[in-house]
Image (tube, rainbow, N blue to C red; front, side, top):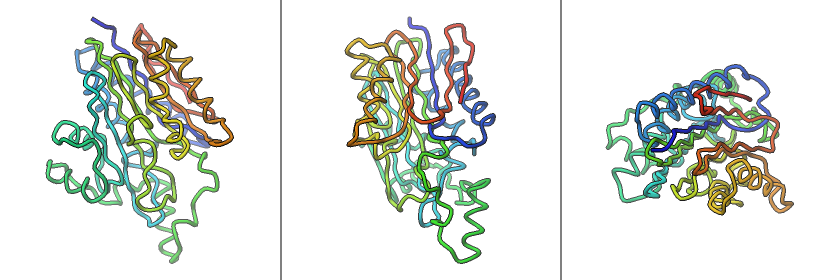
Length: 302
């Protein structure tokens, strides 16, 4: 029997505000996942539950509170992966769903596919009985207020796009190992603010936003998706762990690849290796993250 382990991220970037809320959000998600693992839940159940909690938290760019695209809409991406079977399920450019991570898991267990996108993903969610929510539910706080103000004035959502995509934070991810030694990962995001409609980043792509393999460990990435895709961030970390590097060293080495002048990207990654050791690395000013220490203490930082 293996000791449970869990690590959570809430996105990397400058995080100019909402520090206390973000820290509490990732702490609560890690605590929930840790409790479920202690009760004998599977790693898949734990990562889904913790990810749903973060999707429901408007502080993060996932589910409720996501950024809007250039057309003033919320399009969501999410993935889950099972390290025991290498099965994965993902959705991209999904609209009007509060918890895309659960739709991603349904793709994994109820279809023969790995990834559904756009209207096809929405139709599938409806066929599975997933309730739809209005854009107004997903657009909250500052995002909703800015969106309303711009459209009242007949302007474009581009008017409130931040000039640097590294500002803010918000993509969420959860990596866990259960008592049976099985790994799982979940990653969910609303993408970048002012993205083109239909844009898909790294989060729902296997190996980029997430990867899990019982033979090496599991990882979840966050940051500028166009850069993370170039280094296949999560698979890179898992490959390094599979070669014998501990999670922290593997995470640091993978993030260093973003400094390549051909990439010049920013982001971060969380990981667990087969020994249950935690890895956390990022090259941006802040990263919201939390993990359970071996004694069960939840460590949360931003």
